[in-house]
Length: 502
Image 1 (cartoon, one colour):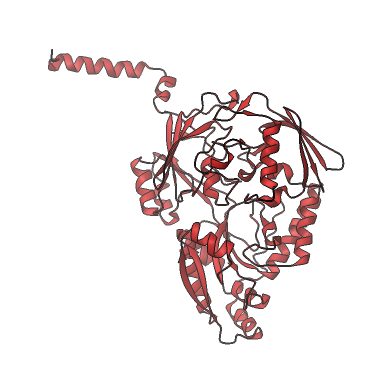
Image 2 (cartoon, rainbow, N blue to C red):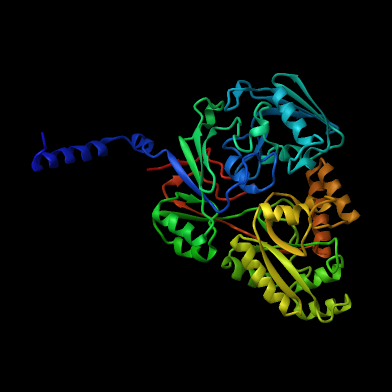
């Protein structure tokens, strides 16, 4: 029987009153999913097999966990290893593991599993992007189901920190080979669906082992929106609830005054550098590299590339990292001196080079600004747009087929990459290598920081890359969404504490 108008109004009024009478907790339960926006879609979902940070930004702490973890303040905390002891000589670590932990496929996590994961990461056939982290591990033993003993060939002061990275997460032997498309981890979420080119959907695990850290969200969706204008439209319309790394700095100020949005400028490890191929001339001559560095006005570049957001750097080190040394004055902006140095190196009329610039906005804009700066000292820069990650990884990272490139290095405390013999910079300096070894084997924190300072100074002097700026974390999200990380001590979108307040 149809409801008459007056009766219909009474029903509607009763419904409104009933909703108003619901407790806040009941209302909050009505919104238990969130849509997170990212500019780049990961090519796979196994952070132990490939380097691009987008993999960890989806999976780390959501699907996968490690023996240790890095918290939002950048500190190392226990995770699957609830405690550990270290021998006096720094060579033996005994980890006590959490009991009753299972992977999302039901398999149990034990010391044997942890041994498998570490041996896989350090093995001869390993494709782990941070394989060198495990190079000092001599043996791994499962003493009993909840006890793991790791013996080192030399003290490794950063071991607990490195074990917290996405590349060191624990993987289950039966699913390790297919984690790239069907990830299986011990984390609070599991993969629900991956619509490639569009979205990745996660669902909360009801059997998650850590009762103290069960997420409030029942699920989450990562959507991939590369175009900055589209990002702004999506966050304004509510189609996307959060862009933890908003990609349009020139539009960011327009969002800061909107009452329904939270905007937070935080710190990151994203060091934007223009790497040069030191394997070939003219980049094998430090005078040329120094001249190119002196051609760059970092402050003007930051204004043009990132709307003034960002902090200049003079070496491969972020200002928020322990032991940071401000070296931006080592080869400060001085185009007259740059031209003189080029002439001393045998290039009085300059030279021409190409820069392979990934398609991200910051990279293409930086390349354009560098092009103008280099022109002032007689150097012609041709910009070659390069698809990222696949083509860039193949041409630049793997085959070293480039003159110059530009990319944001996201890993924390990754200054040691310049000591890797096959890294794309082609940089070799025994003094630098010795400083890195001293830093990474130091058990005294003060000694480690001192040696990292020495390494920073060597890079600032030799300039194997043009050190430009650290990108900020331009976070923007629905004002009712809480728990997202304001700063980014490691690339991540940890959803553990994310919840709605209305």
